[in-house]
Amino acid sequence: MVADPLSEVFDVVKIRGLVSGGFAVRGPWVARAPIEDPLKLIAMVYGRSRLIADGSDRPIELEAGDVAILNNRSWLEQEGGIGDEPRREIKPEENFARLVGADRGTDDVVIGVAVDINPAGRALMLQALPPLGHVRALAATARNLRGTLDQLFDEVTGNRLGSAFAIRQYGQLLLLNVLRAYVDQAQLPPGWLQLLTDERLRPALSLMHAQPGRHWSLEELARTVAMSRTSFAVRFRAVAGVPPLAYLNRWRMLLAQRALRDGDVRVGSLAAELGYASESAFSTAFKREVGVSPLRYRYRVRDEVTHAPSR
Image (cartoon, rainbow, N blue to C red; front, side, top):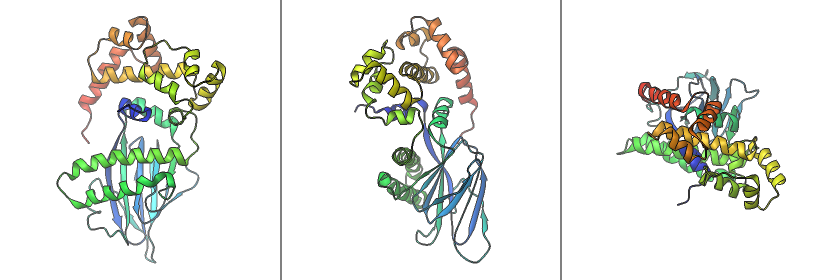
């Protein structure tokens, strides 16, 4: 099966959706919590609520099946429920004890998903997503979102054989469906996410991804999309936020970071594979983009992995 650009990006920057906890509650409630993850999803599985986070000028109204995207936020406040009694303060938990026995018809059910992402992917997401986004389950483009949430809820509360594995998979699928739906529902800023969805530019993008080490010219790339050199360059920059060859260089650097993180490839071999004339030229480009030399980057990320707390 041919990899599509979004799948490639997911693989390169190691994006994972990790279900981090949730709660079910009946009656008026409010939940306040700090946000420790750079990117977090709050899914309103059943019921409805109002959510606000730092930097947002107004709350968003979450209906059943909706998901809030929290991008580089430090706190959130969410409230819901009906009744005359005072609001109960709910402390979000990392386990699912408050979800077991939840009633889909009467309870408000919330599940949180932490998006685990490496620094390169974090930079992409900060550019591509708003501080507070809203994916609506009722939109035609979110037809898979409701089903994914139902299946995730069943696994979280069912305590069945293999449920931990299933929850990890549904966390990934939920992240993918949220991004798919958001792309179709929102006006995207210039950046990689808008570029991946531009059908006119996709042939050129696919070539750059498939052969990153080739010395592409603007003329060659423009011909693949039946555009003039100038028209192609203008459209690409408007969609991606950077010129085509600058994007190609950034893609090479993402591939280089993955290779240095995950394998023991020699720097000289990696330079040749990515189209650089010499190891020195590659190292200079890498340091300019990433901030450290290739070898220092390798040592640093492996040390971080060794000492990272388990989740």
